[in-house]
Length: 316
Image 1: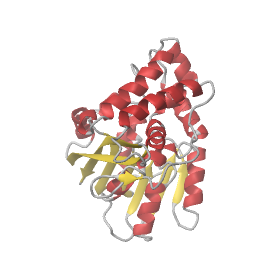
Image 2 (image 1 turned 45 degrees about the horizontal axis):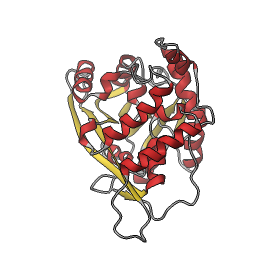
Image 3 (image 1 turned 30 degrees about the horizontal axis):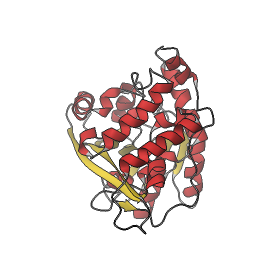
């Protein structure tokens, strides 16, 4: 579990004055089913306005062993020189940095569709030999078949729709003994209080856009342990497929924890600023920890469930 060292004197919210809108949210507001193009546009807009937001929460929350979700996922990569690794939807490049720091002889490539996220990754990895490419996960034709030893994907598989072309491309580019590892949402009940936080945020969002949440961002099968396992096994029928569940958490000044936790949910970005602040106030009460003394600042704790998917020995 991560602990903030001291209260933040100044909090920066991630909401717009009028709430972030896109063709995807506009379709939801009209109670229509958005298409994949609208979803891509929405995701790009979120990452353009808030680059690095996934890292802010995910890198802070840690498991009982002290690892954040990036570090846990990085463990699927064997520490062998010249291992060819593709980070699919690499975002701000933190996972690539962790891998490069572990072994500078890894052959690392990062792919992401967001120019703003890739710029953060470029700045972070400026002294490395990591290759960064702008592309969608469904369009990996620039990568040769059987040319990658390990594909990793941190908390982005959930958002990829359609998902089958992505899985088929991963299978195509992996070597005969290749490994595919992904970090995705875990079962809500695995982390105490997580469902209450999730439901509170969605209650606020659905008051603004009633259809939000009824139509998932991405393919809902990725969010269920059993449905994810079945989907992946159908694509990699001769491979070993395992899914491990863990919980990561953070603790610190209650409002700061509430802001960081809410900032991890795409849904929270559509809220107008005033509504967002009301939600943060209510969220702070949910995550509030009992004070040990009157002099102690108000602390909060946020825990979230994660699943690590591992596909190994993926023969063609």
